[in-house]
Length: 154
Image (cartoon, rainbow, N blue to C red):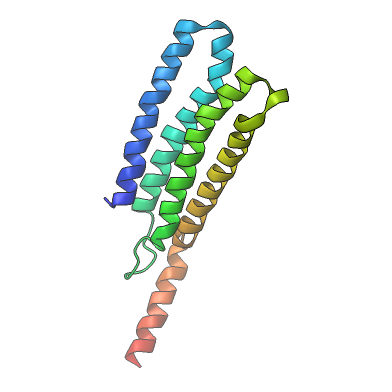
């Protein structure tokens, strides 16, 4: 398993544990705190656990890009990792603080929330750019290989 995939999966497991801790806190505290922390729980679970695991496994198991670069440009995968995780951490901090502070006084937390959204969006785009060329039509790929083999023979 490539290093990048292992990091995505380990971070996914970390976010799973954090999401479960937040869920336990939601159940224990209840009330207004539940409404305040629910978006954080959902993001830790869906972006942190589910998305990170999907991205890690996809980067590992999707068809190869080429013999020289089996997973394509590595920097796209690392950009995805940094964008998704930076955005998630910023959001997990900024969103509850913004709710406590009130939207009228967005200040630093409003700005952090915007930066978190941009980082996650960029991370998602980097993943799409890394994986898109690896989604190949098997028939077209066989035809391309046959054509290449004929060109090398003749």
